Image (cartoon, rainbow, N blue to C red):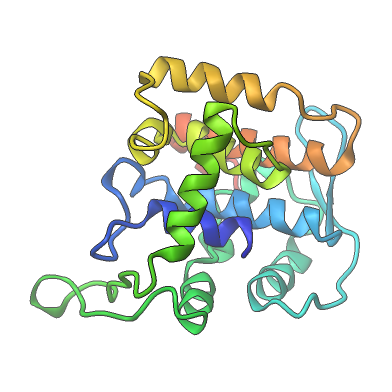
Length: 223
């Protein structure tokens, strides 16, 4: 399962709605996550500069509909600043992520909202993948499990969306929001600074954080 798929499961409530603490910022987190996925699959690179830009390394299909759809959408945007990309609704992977999770039997398509308005809810039909994910992250936070780059990316994205404590309340072992933030910072501090993929991960997450903190300013930079 991709990072963006696991992130989506964490952000969903049992009734298929996005958790309220992150409902406004879901776009930034999921675009950042799918950019990280593309970097991990060797399809994009992030430049080494103060305001990094995204370039396409390869347009060869991965065979994954989420990655391939996003890659196609990114091609005409190559050379754009990462900070501007994470706020682009055009890059929102929500629809294809939901379709993928439905195809895997993890979600089902439910009813629409009040009076039939709004998007259809997509509650879980199989809770096992999310339970395994949460157990994995709980072990990482407790120090009983070795974190992978995927785990660190998920924790960083949640923290930078300002929702880690709300989303991982049952997995953080009673830590306060401040202590959880410190724990995530400790875990992510060991990322290999010289690794190009790790840099892309960090830059995408930082861009999501900037978008959350200054949405008006960031939106004005999209050109």
